[in-house]
Structure formats: structure tokens, C-alpha cells
Image (cartoon, rainbow, N blue to C red; front, side):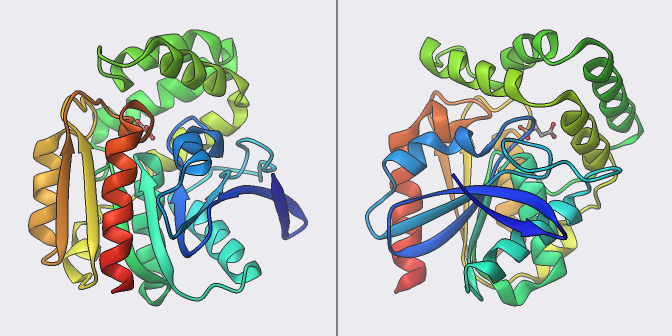
Length: 262
Ligand code: MLT
């Protein structure tokens, strides 16, 4: 695990492979470890760069709410520190929201977009209320209860017990305060449909067939917004396709990177 300092705070990240850099932003409430299948066996010619969002993994939590723009700005600082101007930017679920925020902040840094099990819509009033309940629940009761209950919705029933156990362990390792700050940040996020509609670069959209949170119908809507996008639906996977079906995910990622590289 490597680290940089951002405004005096530690920001950690993992890398794997060598070649075309691909920034991968993790989902909620996980850490960069949730990209283990991409870090351990990246597609040929791909260097994955997986930071821990503020408060998660080894990254320090900063005061206040962690907005998607905050997560994106941190990731841009990491790219600066690594001397990378324009890269393929991807994210899983909340990581996708942060990737879309990064596109909003500075499209010139995005050479290609990978949106996995995510969608561009903002939360409605009921969704915002649920975020606040999650934030209050973990602040009061810690991560354990939330983790085991949330996984039922995140993973398809076909998911391997090993994958469930590892994702549950990652969730339980996360600080409740970081989870609460990111939950409140997701509640504040903007609708990104206009941003995607303006994006004219290449994009890969990946979705698990059984994703209950950002289902294939939402992925189709994203595809319609981006003329140069490709949609891959992964059979048997749920909301965490990159760990549930790593071979299929990595193959789609590898093929996409080859087309962007030309
Ligand atoms: C995630 O996996 O990051 C979350 O399910 C995103 C969300 O709750 O909207």
C-alpha cells in the first residue's frame, strides 16, 4: 500500500499490473481491497490504480461530509502526484458517482470512462432519508449489523461464499464515521445525466445481470446518453460484478482498454 499526503492528510492507494493506467474508485462502504481481482490479476497491459476514499482503508477521514466531488478531487490529486494527466477513469457504484463527479470537475483528465454497477441519478427525498438512517445506524451501532444485512442486497444469490466473506470483512473493517460521511455525501450528489450526455469519449458500462441497486435498465439508459459507449451485462452477477465475476469483468476491462489505446 502506497500513500500521498493531501493537505496534510494521508491518502492511500494500491496498484497492480503495468501499462495503460486505469483509475478505479471503490464502492460503498468498501476499500481499495474490493478491487482484489483487478489488483491481483489485471488484464494484460493495464495498470490499475485503486485509492482508498477519505476515511476508508488507510486514508484519513477529513472533517464534515465526504461529497462525491471531494472523493473525485482527492483522486485527481493522486493522479497529479503520479504525474498522470489523462487516464481511463472508472468506478464501481459509489465509485461511479465519484467518477462522474471527476468528469464534471475536469473532463480533460478523462481519456475513457468505466462505469460499473452505477447510475447517474441523484437520490430522491426517500433515498436521502434512507442515507441518513444508514449514517445514524452505523454511528450508533457500528458496522457489523449493517454489513451482513447490506450484502444480501449487494450480491447475487450465486455469489461465492468466499466473496461474501471477504466483502463482509472489508465492510466491517471500515470506520463508521467514514461510512456516515460518505452516506451523507451520496445523498447530496447531483444528477449526472447531463455530464454523461456531454461526454464524447469512449465508455464501458458494466452491470451484473441481477444488480438490484443499479439494474441493467439503468445501464441501458446510461448507454443511450453516451454515443461511444459499450454495455456489457455480466450473467449471474449482482451489484459487485468486479468481485462476483472477475474473469468476465477483467476481460471486458482489458478489451476496452485495448480499444482506447488503439
Ligand atoms: C455502493 O455499492 O457503492 C452503493 O450501493 C451505492 C449506493 O448506495 O447508491
